[in-house]
Image 1 (cartoon, rainbow, N blue to C red):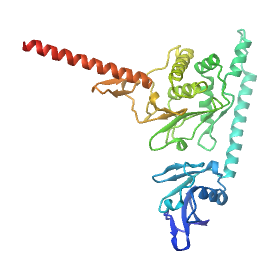
Image 2 (spheres, rainbow, N blue to C red):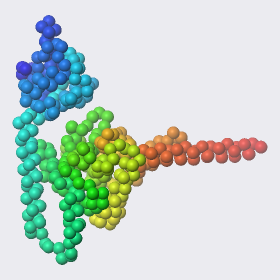
Image 3 (spheres, rainbow, N blue to C red):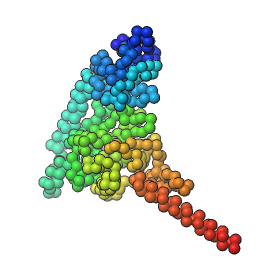
Image 4 (cartoon, rainbow, N blue to C red):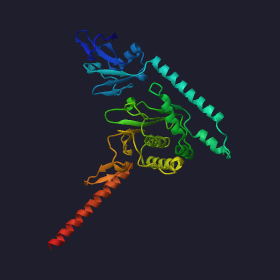
Length: 354
């Protein structure tokens, strides 16, 4: 590998010598990789790991028209000759940076544990009788570890957000009822889960081993609406039981959402509705979920906090956060209503003509 001497991002090819040179930008610095003309993208990944100390598991290659690629590649035999002339950006931490991130995360977790221990030590003792079973359930059916991303600005604020979700009265009630225990609740990096087509809002790995939530705005200048994130969390908790988005999944998801609303005594036991969202926030319909991920598509929020879609009959159907099946049913009702109105109009016209 050679360090790039100029500001050009164009890949270079030396056809006569059978060598292809690719310029890759990593952390704002350009690096030139010289590989044989028959090399594949898997060979390029190996060269990156050797020369830049970026493990394959951390590599994410942004390539025009190909999008974001990461090992294991969908097509590991993709020839690097097809990448010549393209601007290639490498995202990913080196082994040393990853170790530093892990150490910083442990420090944040230790500080949070120390604060909780201090609060427990000096907190006023309750005068009411403590239910041992309730204490046991609260300690068992919860999020056992909270972890913000320490390399993003203000990880302590993200930790407070995660603590708020963990301690949410409605969430705790639903987790006790369904006996949900989650090993790790963490935030996701918006840049790592955004494509031109969609934005992933939540992930559930191994049925509750890890749940990731998109807390921050895409510009990293603030945090998304709490009620929206809490609804995303309800969806991810449903994946602890059901993997596919079938009838069983949606029935349980709505049940959990209702329980969270009723169990939240801070809102008077009412399900939170007509939420106000951060500026530029969109409300996703449940049809945007794919493969255990909450993927935000291109729908836009309408009046009354709901989504409005156009039916085939030309009318508008308010979804209000309904499932895809319920939206289709409402659209069918709208078509039937339009059809009956048209039949009445035709009948009245015929009667008048007679």
